[in-house]
Amino acid sequence: MSELDEVREPSMDQWLAEAKADPKAAACGMFLTHNGVVRITPKAQVREGAQGLPAVAAIDFSYDATGVDNAVAQALTMPGISYVRVWLAEGRLHVGDSIMYVLVGGDIRPHVIDCLQELVGTIKSTCVTETEIYEQD
Image (cartoon, rainbow, N blue to C red; front, side, top):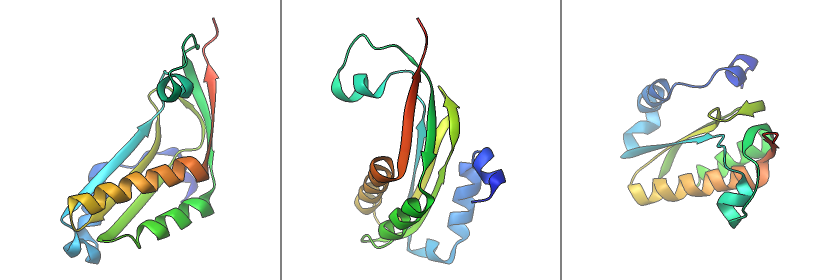
């Protein structure tokens, strides 16, 4: 990923056009996208039901590019998957900013949904570091 790509969010219209022009697209009956965004609600509240936490103002976000490349390579071995593309932001991100985009193309809906879920889960659990920065009272 070039320095310019890291700064500017991708266009899903452009990504889909490029994916459909790819020679592997003929095997794809579905493309599915994911856009992860910084939310105001703390992770502990959303995932664990914790209460009384301050609102999130921003996150500091980084990722292991080799780990992401390995996750993409693994995703491409999943049944029916022909196309995978990932973009991740880096640095200080504020509420509403995009964290990541993922595009998966494959033969049938169940394969594509399973791949997207596994790929995003792998990236989030093994490849990224997120530190929430809270609004001050």
